[in-house]
Image 1 (tube, rainbow, N blue to C red):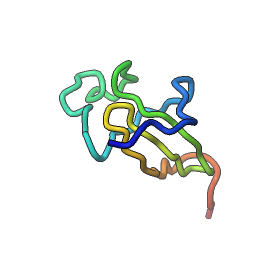
Image 2: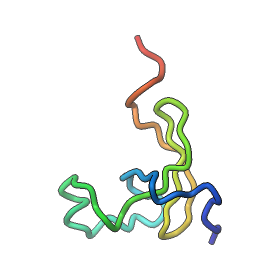
Image 3: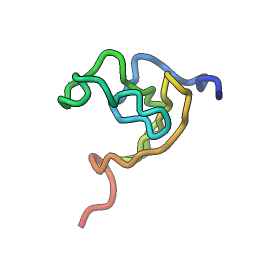
Length: 74
């Protein structure tokens, strides 16, 4: 398992499902689309709508395009 990124800060979080551990699967709060106190991810950085995340549960690193915010517009 990877260690947590040194820039990981609990003050910068995102609520996105982890593609590796899927720890949110059986959580009623997550399934209701609410902000869960247990199943958040570290928001390491972003470039426009592309978020760079790390799961505090399994330490998986990935990028996710939120489709929100700055980016290409038609």
